[in-house]
Each structure stands twice: as structure tokens, then as C-alpha cells.
Image 1 (tube, helix red, strand yellow):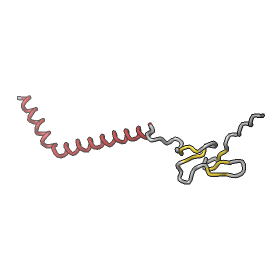
Image 2 (cartoon, rainbow, N blue to C red):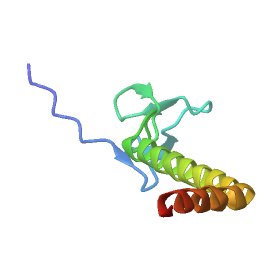
Image 3 (cartoon, helix red, strand yellow):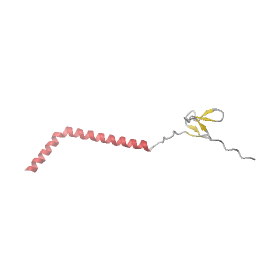
Image 4 (tube, rainbow, N blue to C red):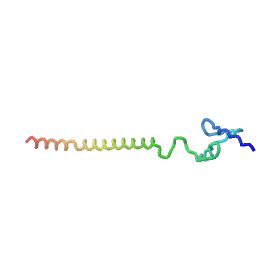
Length: 101
């Protein structure tokens, strides 16, 4: 009773879409693209490097959100200053006159 020799590791194409079974190339991804052959069994297919909440994606979202807030606040301040510039200047003139007397 001899032990079975260890199986060689599975061989995949460079793009990972095909695997060699010793006789022919077979698809490593199911037709519905939900499953991937890992050389021994079918496992759920996940795109390498992709996740549901990657840190880079969250960081980019936060930065873009912050930039958007800064732009909106800047526009609001600009509109207020343009529409009320004469009134603000009049208030400062009144304060200056009151302090001077």
C-alpha cells in the first residue's frame, strides 16, 4: 500500500481565465462569472484587489466631499459679499464715525 504522490499545483493562464488539467485548457471562471476554479474546487469569484469598502475609495470620497463643501461655502460667501457689500461698508463707516466722536 503506497501513498499517492502529491498532485502538482494547478497551472493557470497568465490572465487567470483558463487552467490546464493535464490534457487541455479549461475555463477557470464559470459562465455566470460567479465562481472561480482554484485548482481543486469552485469558490466564489472575487476580483483581486476589489472589496466592498476599500480604504482608497473611502478616502477619495471623503476628499471629494470636503472639496465640494469648501467650494459651496466659498460660493455662498462670495454671493453674500457681492449682494451686501454696500451695507457692510455703511456699517463700518457708522462704527468708525461713532468711535471717532
